[in-house]
Length: 259
Image (cartoon, rainbow, N blue to C red; front, side, top):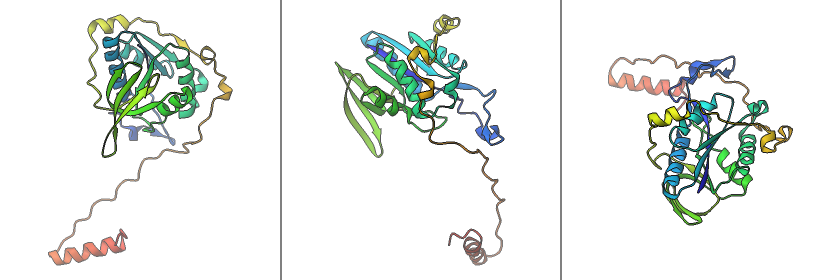
């Protein structure tokens, strides 16, 4: 059972993004970067499948040199190999372009299934997993909260609004992990030391057979990022209950204009 896990590095969820808005953009210089939490569930599930059925777990991450730390964090948990995908032209890619690169790399590796988190907690889009599945021609199950392998198929439970949905998916397929799928293990000291000096290969566009000029560019452009306006100070009403009620209705009607 050969499994590929797509890993994304994101700012730590404790990062105060509102304090990093400069000149209409978000400046993440010096911010603490971590593995996308939903991707951690995907890695954990892949490791459990390997432990039960044998095989290997290979990690793929698209990004500059800093993503190597994310890959090493997941290697320390027990993944077998990791590959960084990077070319300067990737810096301006949107979800479709990122999916093109990831799908091209997946095709280069032996695999029975592909795992990833259902979304990145930085942009909250959740578009890359279904794009990758479409480009590979594979079925895709998202929001996976339970997984059982049955031969060349998998039975998964996906969270849907107001309930759960059980799906039978033929392999190879792309699966997107949801919180609650498992409890992520901690890295052992032995695992941490084993990957400290591990060399992670970097695949450029040529290594995966891509023409950078032909990659789809984002259809959406962020013009500017601004902090929300400060809230006006609260107002304290005084007088009798009847007087305060009349004043409140007047304010809601004349100033707030909600009545």
